[in-house]
Image 1 (tube, rainbow, N blue to C red):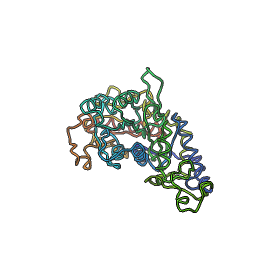
Image 2 (image 1 turned 90 degrees about the vertical axis):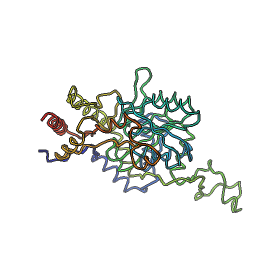
Image 3 (image 1 turned 90 degrees about the horizontal axis):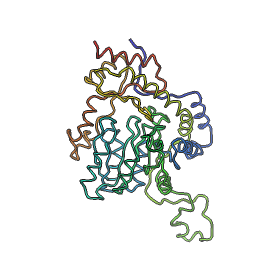
Image 4 (image 1 turned 45 degrees about the vertical axis):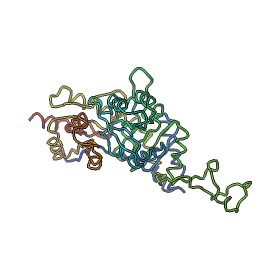
Length: 399
C-alpha cells in the first residue's frame, strides 16, 4: 500500500527558486519592476519569438489576445471542445460566438479537415479566427492551419499552455517551436503550478507582430500609457496648463483605451525566470517518463489509445484511453494516486449547451472523453512512484 500521495501534476520549487523570490521581495519593486522585462526577454528567447508580454494568468493572456485582435459582438471563432474552458471563454468575454469543431482521434488535436468543412460550407467572412490548442503538450501543425487561415482571412491564437519547449516537426520543414510566432498571430502560455514553469499564477503572450505587442502592453495596464510617442491627446495641453513646446511632465499619462489590470508581479517573474532555466531539463524528464509509460502499456489489450512517444511532445499530460475509466479512476484514488480527467468537452458544459450544443455533435471528442485518464506526469516523479502507478493499473485490469 502506498503511503505517499501521487498527484497527476506537481510543481518543483528549488532552493534557487526560493532565493530569487526572496531577493525580489527585498528589492524596491514588488510589481512593474525590472524582473518582468527580464522574464519576458528570456521567455521570448526560449520559444524563439520576437516579443513576449507577461500577464497575471493564462486566461488573462487569452482575453488580451482576443481584445488585441478586435473580437466583437457576434464574431465567430473556431476552437476545439477538448480543452480547458478558457480557450473558448476568451471569445465570449468580447461578445463573440464560439464555434466548436471535432478533434482528430489519433492526435486529440483540432482536426484541420473538420475545420475546412466548416469554412467551405459558409460564406467567406463568416469566421474571424481560429484557436487551436497544443493539447497535453502535442504541438499543432500550425503551418497547415496558417495556410488555411490565410485562404479565409482568419487570425490564429495558439493556446500553447501545455507545451512550452514543445515543437512540431513533419520532416518537411524546419522544427517549429510552440509559440515562436511564425504561423500564429499570437500564442499564450500558463504558469499555473502544474505547468512546466510554475509562478503560482501567471501567463505569457508571444508574438512577432510589433503592433499587436504594443496593443498588449497598453491593454495589460488599464489601457494607460506613459510613452510620449503614443500620446494622442494631452489633457494638460487642452486645459492650457502646458505649451506644446514643453516636454510632458514625469507624472503625465493617458488612458487611451479600456484595458485591464492583468499585470504579473516581480517576484512571480523572478520565479518564472529561475524555473525557465530548468525548462529543457524538465522536458527531458517528462519525455523519459512518457517513454516508460509507453513501453509498459504497449500491446496491452485494455489500452484503447495512449499518448505514445511523439517527436516534440512537451508532455504536460500523459493520457491513456481505457474501458471502465470511472472504476480505474476510483481505484487509483483509493491507493492515493490522484489521476485526473482532461477534459469534459466544452460543448457539453451547461453554459455552452444553452447555445444549442448537445451530445452527439462531436463524436470523436465525446468518445475520447468517455475513456481518457491523465496519469501522474511531472519531473520529480520517481521511478518507484511511476512503477507503483503502472503496477496498480496492471493489477486493476488483470485481476
